[in-house]
Length: 495
Ligand code: SF4
Image (cartoon, rainbow, N blue to C red; front, side, top):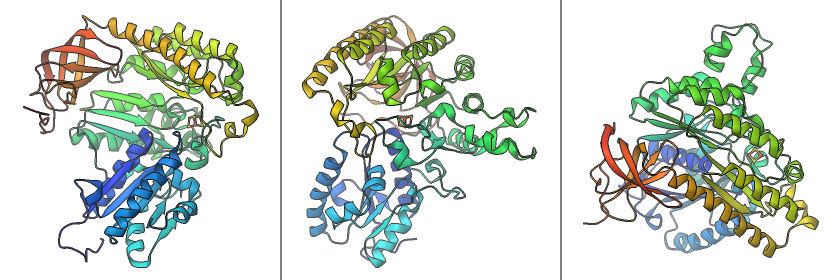
């Protein structure tokens, strides 16, 4: 337990998150650890006694953003020398000592493999001065290895992320993740199911299974067990289906996991992110089709429609293979929403390559897409391909052409939903009007509901879709199908 010598009031904290869902989930865990140590959430960052910046080096200008933020916090630290500033996450993992060289007022730097040490490191810094602790790799025996195994402070009570693996065994040329998060390590099957059961007991009805490459979940676990004689406890590591299979063939366990999570009482919706197209297997598609709790939404990152560029990215599939898998999923899962990620202007991308991306995007008709102009991440293979960089103006022009194609299919998929009755879970007050609430359909589409402000977060309702725009749907409440399992009213934005 930390000492609180400066005040009788509990110390307070703030966590600022940069980057992806994996980072947001890590932040939840950091917040949970701090709360378990007696700290409370500060009203504002300026008032906090402990400020954690959980960084990401995947997004553009990540270091500029971090050092800009640290520059602003320097003034705060001069005014309130007893506050502690910590930098965590993948930029910390990558930059290490550089952070304290550039920002001497930082008290603690810790990386992606020791999130569970946050409180101890802050304590140590309070006693002995600044601390940097970056582990090169995870310590496999460590019970706190997975962020989900730590205490948590969830932003929403009805929905939760569950980390099923950490790291990535792929080597996409543009991506820094394998360098900063290490190789793939899957979390034991039984531990995951126990966590989902605990979440359901707490009133969580929707879980999102989280990993860098969810489709390969469990391959490492089965590889490890295949030569060993069967033990009665194997099912705790790999699940009943694999443990009871006499062949003990090494294989991923993701489809088994979808089925087992869907069976947990109280779980209404199961989502996952992100799959890798090369690892999307028929049994995963079958589980999505057969398990009613698994939502009809597939986020399948395309990155490029050109085989030449896909090969240069080391993605491990062709445009044709991508389409085959997607068509198989669409054939088996009615009303499937498909979203993607696409990079424009990867080094060496010609107009012909780009047109292939445009054509493929038009052929698929994505519900939506995260589209990015290539920007080099230091430490990646693509960052070294400087002689093939595409002129920025060309990238911008291509980006706009791609956006037009995506927006067209996005509007069309939304318009096709008008008149349908959807199951919607309420997420919070509407930002556009105090009389509205917003919710999500099973296809992960945002719906604004008029005159429904009394609905609590986590309520399930049948909603008639009345109108559509590019990024949202409008709907009318037909009936509440399941009340929220926890008691928290949506704050009304204004009278
Ligand atoms: S699959 Fe590729 S893009 Fe995804 S985390 Fe691994 S290396 Fe990065």
